[in-house]
Image 1 (cartoon, rainbow, N blue to C red):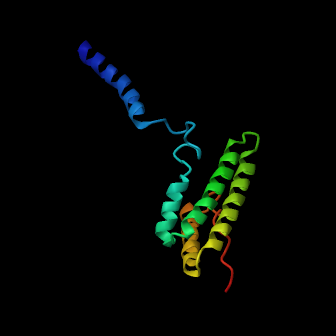
Image 2: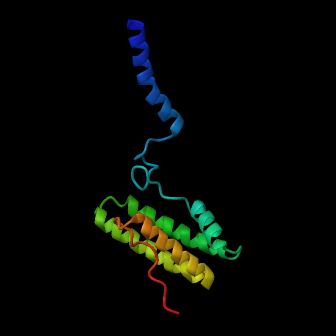
Length: 143
């Protein structure tokens, strides 16, 4: 009976350690820039997603990548600024996203703009009014 208890105790102690060793850093660590369970997507993943959804041309891809890289760097600076309040950081990040979305829209065709705006609206809907849900592109201009 004692052997069974020791075996179960050993198993209980070793299982979490082995899971951490295999799974990388735990949520909330330094690689988890957006907080527990949320990581900032890489520029390449964003570019891949936009390329697929908007059917970007080969000429558009480097321009879009430059905007995404600039956005990523600005966001990183905001996240690294520990002296700003949470609300200040959230506001600054929203402004960065809005400016980046405006730059992206300027690179798109009318058809791509319509799809981009739809993607932004769907994102706001998924966020369901959570803080930061209005971080998409401003409403499209009337044509």
